[in-house]
Image (cartoon, rainbow over all chains, first blue to last red; front, side):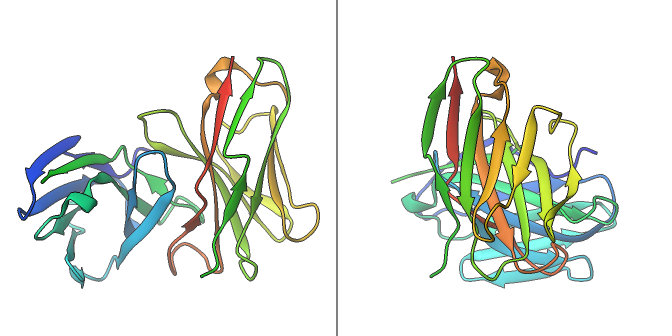
Length: 112
Length: 115
């Protein structure tokens, strides 16, 4: 099943601005996770939010989850050039077995 | 800090050749995965492995693919007869828990180029 579709596909902002990325999914989930991928590198886990949670913070990251709309957002505040990367949401669907299903990702470019 | 390691980092092969991609998961982890990412596209699930057997596999994981955990530390992905469309980045991941409990730990990937 198609899960975790992000928008926008690409986002370009100035250093110091906030970046917001959105993720939509289609079926019920146990949790939703966000990962970061620097160009040509592996995926690094950023944050996990469970289906019974609405908001979570970790440093400059804020994640929200709206299960009624089947959507999540990742906010990076006070962005830095080092935040330039691709960001993926991944869902642990209730009917997806024991695996994560990744979206297509948002490419974030932070200009200094 | 423990990490998942993958070798080789880049492999170039001719179409029809067999390739083996190797992964050393984090030592106390129990669940193992292979994902792939075709250049510029989404990260796709291939297979999960637990208790020395395949737990789940995707439609991509056809008879050309196999996985093994031969010695309790390595976790390998074999592609028996590579096709051009197998060119991708292959990521190994491991975790000590089921995914509803926490995150996956990914390696840096093996880039496979099939000519």
